[in-house]
Image (cartoon, rainbow, N blue to C red):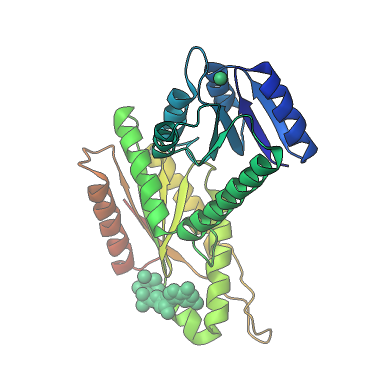
Amino acid sequence: MYKILAVDDAKDTLLLLEFDLSAEGYQVVTTDAADSALRLLEKEHFDLILLDMYMPGITGIAALEVIKKKEALQHIPVIMLSAADGEDEIVSALELGADDYVTKPYIAKVLLARIATSLRLMEKNRELEMLATTDFLTGINNRGRFYELASKAFTESVRQTSELVLAMFDIDLFKLVNDNYGHETGDKVLLEYTQLMAKVFREHDILGRLGGEEFAVCFPHTAIGEAINACERFRLCLEQHAIMPEKQEQETLFVTVSIGIASTGIASSGLEDLIRRADLGLYQAKNTGRNKIID
Ligand code: GH3
Ligand code: MG
Ligand code: MG
Ligand code: MG
């Protein structure tokens, strides 16, 4: 059920909105001031906001600006509601990021149709965002999304002077898996590998598939020793994890992984430098026998 926040200083408008939206099957929360609306938005999730333009205190327009600047809120569709139908007002609301504009007194049928349209677009955007940021085969962050999240975590770690660790993973001799067991089994290995990763690492560690059989994990607020322990746990789990090939006559198979690790602990000049050092470790792991971690 979609949850809509209706904000208007006129009590009669709120009553009408509550009646019309509930009748349509929406969950409605109403409030008569922008500041309390902003507080509600901090605490609860809403799918859409109906926002009056003119209210005493913070105006709807000012609240709209705040909402559209906040990363956590800017994706929520906002429909402005106002008795004012001056063209400049409509244009400025839309320019500030309002998704639609409805004049009061509103016609229930039209308002409901516009709400449905905004919700449909929001769902489409969500779906597109998911497709653009998720790796299709494994369902974890793709390369672009991983670097976006790692970069944010890096900036945060600099601000808080807390340690951040980056680890690069490359499955050993993976080409042989494809050659000996077929591409489908190769895909199955990648999938089980990812599931194992998700199980071993913590919720707030950032996982990503960089491409092919290359993965990365970013550990925010983590000391290098802790990250090495976690990676070692993963390396051992993987080594012991038996995978059933697609063709049943073939024997179970095992894969191993090589890992390079770098930390912001030793004077780090940026995320690129961290990646370069982790890559260097990975390269050394590959060149000195594989199935190991080098920091
Ligand atoms: P190394 O230990 O040196 O990393 O050897 P390797 O065989 O793992 O390295 P190489 O880079 O030569 O081979 C990677 C292979 O990964 C080649 C490619 O066919 C395979 N691969 C990449 N993406 C996928 C995928 O999505 N599915 C499957 N099944 N195989 C993939
Ligand atoms: Mg008003
Ligand atoms: Mg590779
Ligand atoms: Mg490899």
